[in-house]
Image 1 (cartoon, helix red, strand yellow):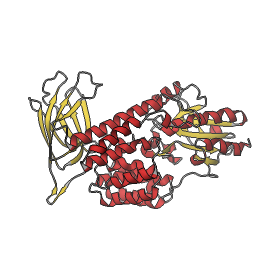
Image 2: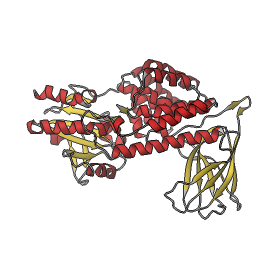
Image 3: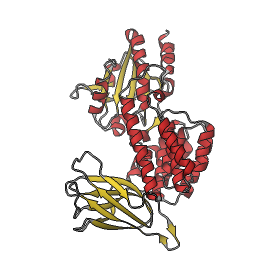
Image 4: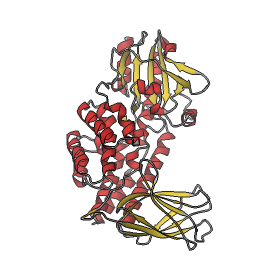
Amino acid sequence: MKTRLRHYAFMALVLAFCVPTLSPEGLAQAVLRGKILASDGKPASRATVESLDFVTNTAFESTQTGNDGFFSLSLRHTGLHRVRFSVATRHELLARIYIQHLTDVEVRFTQDSSVTPRLIFKDSTSRTAKLFAIYNEIGEELARFRTATRNRTLRPGESSKGIFDWSPHIFRSNQQLNSETDSTVRQALFIARLVPSFFGDTLSPAAARLSLNSISPRHPFWEEANILCNSSIRADYLTYLDTVIETHPDPWTRALTMFTYLPLGRATHDSTRVHRFAARLLSEFPGSTISRMAIPFASIAMRDLSGGDPMPPFSFADLHRPEAQISSHQFRGKVSLIVFWATWCIHCVEQLPFLRAAHDRYKNIGLEILSVSLDDNPQSATSFLKARPLVPWRQAYAIGGFNNEYVKQLGVYAAPAEFLVDKNGRVLATTNDLIRSKLDTTLSRFFGK
């Protein structure tokens, strides 16, 4: 089951935090300089270049280009930065750049604002250029993967592995590993090679352990290696995780590492780490976005719904009639299956055929299914379902997604999340007993089929 972190647009795969290089005097300064060309190919004057905070999106440092299009931005430290280049037309480029002491770039904007501007490094063989290329490829592969999975409905028993072919990506990563000598770049390639395992490809214990041993706990892109948290070497991973949190030089990377583990730890009942990490986030990063999101995990009384518990009341917008509400009282006297899902969640998509089979088999003997979308907007869910007409059960939308009041009261922090509820409003079974083939096994037990 993918954790709530998956909702944050897989922060671990599209975000990275600034990692400083320490010197005896403190943080080493760095300079990003270069030229920005407007869509007409001419130098862009008064274009803005900013280094952004990864959490608040506010600018740490900023500068503007001169009439010749050139700029020079002094930064407080070397390492990974989130940089925004923008021109007067509101056309902008957001890029993660591993900035060494001096990094020269050229940015070329296009007339079509839907086309990503080009970022060109003066030294194409530098560590900076190589890391940028690796993570650009990861982003492009993930975009193709999402397109492939969204455009296909799986059959019962079919895995997402058969929909998308990761082998070219793995082959390219292996080829680069064979020839690359820079240790930082090699570790990034190990991370890139692991990405498919997070989305359905099998990762053997030997491969997982090799990758874990090859990626330093102090590596600037460490949070990308959180994909190992779902691997078969959980004990090794937890030891590694603790090392990252205690030794990584960047406080925000430590914060992200602790935060990304919270939903996984909760799902696996690792209450000791969950409470410890949440408490540290609240004390060490007071007032930050990441500490506010950790508040629900800090409660000692926090626990998941389980069999026999009363199902808390809920009310969600009808996906197809937004002015109407679908509420828990409408299911009193019925056996109901409440499913929380999202279009971006591959395991939710994989669950659809099992839900359809359950609907067809049990609908005439009392089962009602309600799917509640956790997407950022209802249009994502309606478009997705329009392409899949064989989803005939009721559909709702949770405004605010995981931040919805009722979603939080139900303790939903992951997708998919499922609750089988009896006629009296008590929980019969939860997600772990309702995923894939377990769904029919559980339903047949309760319905006597």
